[in-house]
Image (cartoon, rainbow, N blue to C red; front, side):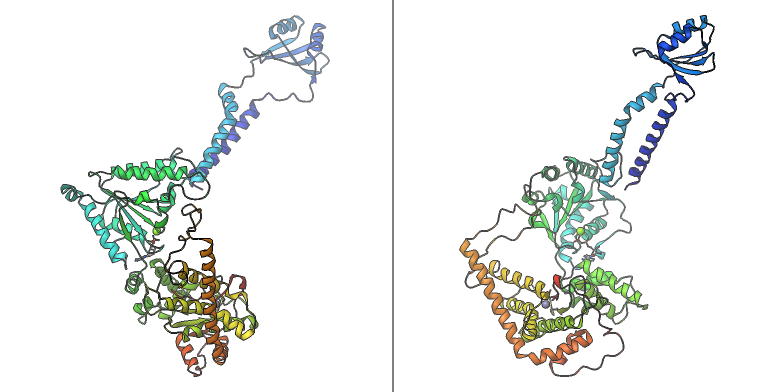
Length: 638
Ligand code: ADP
Ligand code: MG
Ligand code: ZN
C-alpha cells in the first residue's frame, strides 16, 4: 500500500473521531436524574400557583422551525424540574410576576460548520472510502486524479547505465539496433536526406533472451532519454484510462525528443482485437487504437523511436505489424554455443572464479538455456560456493548450477522407500540404456535417482554435443523410444507399471502428434499441415478457429499417433529385453551411488566395475521424495 493511501486512511479515521467528538460535546446533555420532568401543562399550573422559585429559560427555537423552549428550575419545596414549552417571553414575564428568579440563557446553537460537516459526513465518508480503494488498486502514487498519467519510468541520465557491452550473444540484434542509435544521435542527418526511419521496432524472442536488456542498452548507447513502460501498465479497470496513459506517454516523449520509448511485453495490450473469451475488451482495444494513432502521428520531424518487446508475436494484432508501424522486426533468439560462452563471460565479470572453470565447456553443456538462465546458473554456483565456504567458484559448483537451473535443486531430504527407489532406478536405467543403444542419440550426461525440483523423482540427462536446428524423422522416433523406455523397463522387470511415466508419455505423445500433424512425417497422412497451431485460450485468437480437417482424418491422425507410439514402445522393449543382465548390473550400482555420470555409465556397459566411492561427496544416505502422481523422470533433451 502506498504511503499516500496509508495517510488517507489515517485522515479518514481522524475525521470520524473529530466529528463524533464535536457531536458529543454539542448535543444538549440529558438532564441528570435528580430532575423531575413536568409536562408543559403541569408546569404552567405550578407557575400559576406560585410554586416556582427559580426558572432558567433557554429558547432553542431557530427561525422556520417549531419552537422549543427548555425550562429548568426549582420548586419552592426544593424539587428540581425540567420541562419543555413554547413562547419563552410569555413564560418569562409570567414567572417574574409570580416572584420567581428568572434567567434567560442564550440559545444552544451548533455552529454552522458543524451542521454542514455532520450533514455531509456520510457523503464525505463514501468519497473517502472510494478514493482509498482507488489508491490501493493503483498501488499508490501520484496525485488523486492521476489515472491518466502514464506510468512510464524515465531514465534521463545514462551514467552507469547498461550498454551493448553488457549484452552478449545477439550480434545481429545489436547491429539492427545500431541504425536506430545512429538516428537518435543525429536525427537531422536522416531527415535532410528525406529518409524514412523506422518509428517502431519490435523485438521478438523467447523470455529471458535479453530483449529488455537490449532496449536499455540501446538507450544507453544513444545517450537519449529513455521511457520505459510495460504493456500491463496500460491495462486498468476503467475504460479509457489505458488510452489516456498512452496519450500522456507520447506527450512526454515529444517534449524530450529525441528519445526512445520502450514498451515491454506489448502483447498485454497489443493482442489481436476481438480475441479471447467473453466480451469486454473495450479497454484493451481503445489502448491499442491509441498506440496506433500515436504511431501514425509520427512524421518526419518526429525523432522519437518506439521499441516494443514481446515473446508472443503470434498473438499480436496484425495492425501493429503493418508498414509504418512496428515495421522493423528484430529477432532475439536463444543463444548458440558461442553466444552462451559470451554471455557467461559477461556475467562472471566481477565474480571470483577458480582457474579450472572452462566457460567453453559450460557453454557446450547448456544448449537451450537463455541469458537469464545463464545468469541464474552463475548465481546459483556462487551461492553454492559461499555455502561450501570456498574461496572462489569452481567447476563443481558451475556444474551443479546447470542442474539446478535445468531441473531444480536436489531434494535429498525426502524419504523414498527402498521398493520405490528400486523401481525408479530401473526406470531411469531403462531410459539411459535405450538412449545408448539407439543410433545417433545425444550422449548420456547423467543418471540420477536423487529427486529434483518439485516433480522429478529421478532423471536421465542427455546433452547434445552441439546446437541443433533440424531434427530428422529417425531422431524423433528415437526420442519417442527413449521417452517410453522407462515405462518399458518397469514392465519388463516388474511385470507391472507405475504412474511414474506420466510426463514421459505426455512428451512422447506430443512429439508423435507433431510428427503427424505439423511435420508431414507420416506416410499415411502425407505432407499436410493439419490443424492450426494450438492457441492458449485467453491469449490467442478466438478458440472457435480450429480444425481444418474432416472427422475421418481426425480418426486417421489418432491411429497414426497410436501406431508411432506402439512401434517405438516395441522397439524400446526389444532393446531392454535383450539386455536384462545389463539393466540389473547398472541398476544395482545406481541404487548404491544414486548418481552416475556419462563416463561411469559407459564403463559399466563395458563390464568394468567402478572404483569405490572416494570420500563422502556422492552417496549420502538415501533420502528422496515421492510425488508419483506428478510423474517423474525429467529426461532433459534440449
Ligand atoms: P527478456 O526481456 O528477453 O525476457 P531480459 O532482458 O529481462 O529478458 O533478461 C533478463 C536478464 O538475463 C538480464 O537482466 C540479463 O542479466 C540476463 N541476460 C539475458 N540475455 C542476456 C544477454 N544476451 N547477454 C547478457 N545477459 C543477458
Ligand atoms: Mg523482458
Ligand atoms: Zn521416465
